[in-house]
Length: 260
Image (cartoon, rainbow, N blue to C red; front, side, top):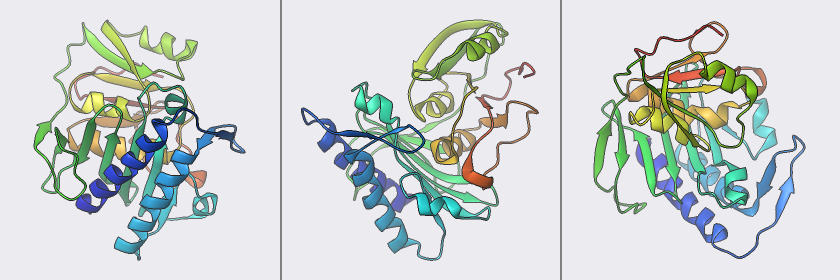
């Protein structure tokens, strides 16, 4: 499964970069007021076709196909073909391709590819998580390095937060921690920065959908991290009605979480 996910993510990333490199591209607004571009649609078509061919018996949920949002159950494939469309439109580079497999409500296999950043993360077939460090040939995996979460120092935490969705509520929550430094990132890269130990804590007090988070959560959990609901600190699970997430916290174990 991870071989298929990896190949499709890289191919979709190239299709996205082909459009990203043009002088101008059209941006439309969807019914939920979020932006969509030809890059979202091209990546979605490529990934969906590949997944349906490889895994015809698995349900598929993808952001860009509204009819898939009626899927029910707790075991399915889930895709965000271009997570961080706002970053893409503003040419900030922090956009990703997210492909995940959710089993019994838990994302267990995932790929996160940031083509403009040259970073590719995925769950390893034998357990754990890796970052592929070169080549990005769809047919031939390149060198990888194992990744793992930090051992946090609660007197000097590194926090990552959203570039496009920071608000006063998020800042107020972060202020409850002893923070050494903060960084910002777009899309599911925030999960991956916690997974690699580049950050200790990522709180999200804003609307997200399961396709935004599943692949990143799979990578982070495989790297030893945790993702919990903001309200009660119970695990963030998948297959919820409408695929909408509650607020959540992603972190390296050892972070002393403040109550929401």
